[in-house]
Image (tube, rainbow, N blue to C red; front, side, top):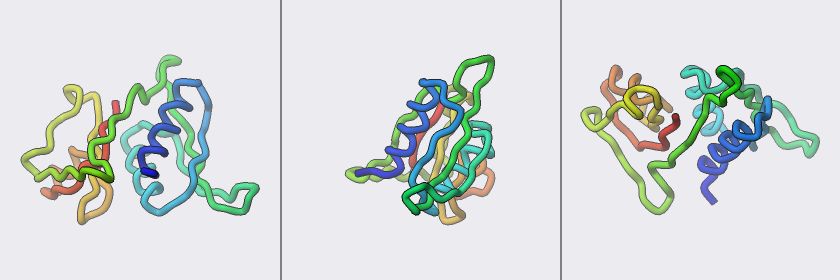
Length: 129
């Protein structure tokens, strides 16, 4: 199962159900993605906690603007069955600048705008708007 897609669907579903926060199983990769979403205003806070079962989880606080969820939709670009790689020149604005493209680059998890500034390409993980 695709663990990143599972995390994104959990965030989207919690947003649509108007939950304040959502708990996601922890991994360093998911934590880096959550930090990227936090920097771009899609999440309010990111905390690593230990669940009742003893396993670590990420507690993600969700953002709402005018009682509307900040995360409207998520589209996975690169899948386990088909990896998509973008060069610096291939990175374009999503939804005329209202969305965000998240990439896995040699410099870590970056959004599309920052990746263009750093002049690095990488695997396009997902689009969020």
